Every structure is written in C-alpha cells, then in structure tokens.
Length: 303
Image (tube, rainbow, N blue to C red; front, side, top):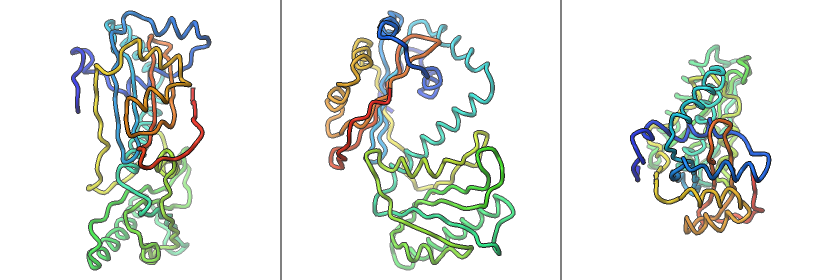
C-alpha cells in the first residue's frame, strides 16, 4: 500500500468509516461552498482500487480537529447496531464485486444450480457440502483435461433478506468455459449457465445480483477459492488538495476531464459526491474502466 498517513490520528481512519459518515447531499450551492472551505481540512486522501479493468477512486478529507470527526462517528454509532450491520453488508457486497472484476473475464461462466424434490438439503451446511462436491468434480475434470487451475466464487441462497426460508439454490462464477460439462456435472437438480458479459462497470451487475438476498446479520455471505487475486489498493495523501476536491465537488459535469487526466488509460464512468451531517468536507467516489476495454455510454451523474 503506497503513501503514508498524514499523522498518527489518521492511522485509525479508513474509507469504511468515511462512507458511514458522508451520507447526504447539501441543499444549496451556498451550503456546499461553506462546507468545503473548512480550514480544518488540511488535505485529502486519495484511495485507488484496481479490480481487473475497473478502477475506483475515493477521495475524503484529512482533518486537524479529529475530535469533531470522532464525536460525529460516536453519535452515529449510538443509533443502533442495525447501522453497523448495514455497513458490514455494504462493504461485503463491495468487496465481492471487486473480487469478481479482478478475477473473471468474458471467457468464464455464471451458473445457477437448483435442486429437485428428491435432493433438497435440510440445512445450509448440507447445501455447501453439495456445492463443494460439485466443485471437486469440476477440478477433477480440469486436471484430467489439463485445463489449468479452477477459480471460483459462489453464494448459496437458503433464506431471503428477512430470514425466511426459500427453495435453496446456488450461484457460481468460475473460470471454466465448457457450459455443457459444467451443467452435466451438477447431479442434484437442474443447472443453467451462461457466459459472463461485462458492461461499463465490468461484472458489477451479476455480482450484485448474486449478493441480493444476503441478510444483514449473515456471516456466511460467499465462498471464494483461495487462489483468487485481491484488488490492488494504493493510498496517497499528496495527490488531491482541499481546493482541488472543492472544484471537483462543485463542477461534477467536468469531472470526467479531471479523472481521465488523473488516470491515463482509463475512461470515466460515474461520480458520486456526498456530504456529512457530522463534519465538513466531502466524500468523492469515481468509477472508471480501462480504455482498451471502452464502453460507449452516456455519462452518469449520481449526485
């Protein structure tokens, strides 16, 4: 991880904390200007996350008066444990999306595995055992055919977001291109597969779909293979000044020019700008795609 924290206090802060604090939009341009020009903001931290062809940039303030930020966070933390569960789920989905974008391509497949009435598992653990055995069969086939090492990530849906039991099924992404064999090797019911189809956000859509039924208090969200590569994350404290962050936040229609210059070789997709009811400054999120995989699309401003 590149870059160094501005001071010892900032070692305690990460982007998950900031995303919890910066949650709202200001009502007027005057409110925004007053919020952004707080002199306690000495500079901004830039976090860059690369996941395959997708690049994300997160910009958030480094402050002198950290006590003010801490009070704001404590105030929010005191509302309920549900806020923390929401944040945990949000971060789990985000990391899942990044893992999928980092490790899988259009040559890989998405599978929907279902059960017939004779093989319905009675527990999540049994369903996981079934999927594990299925993956072993895929691995044996790949070894026999000398197709390399299997990479996969899967989600088992046993209950909906409210905890009510649903007909169990599994979603899997794997780097195995033979759809016919993949479907034949599932012996517990029906299997349907299709090629992965990235768009301007890579594979975010299919990844979010796989995580859609996850409960906020679940600890069994997804299972990745151990050979998956992690997103590449770098942090810098000297790339974006307070004034530059202010200009970006107030002129979002020209943000594509700023970020395409900041990250040569990448095409701008979207920007999100958020403010906080607890502290001043701004949180900026930008998504981009590598230019050798451009997707022509209308620029979106999710403000």
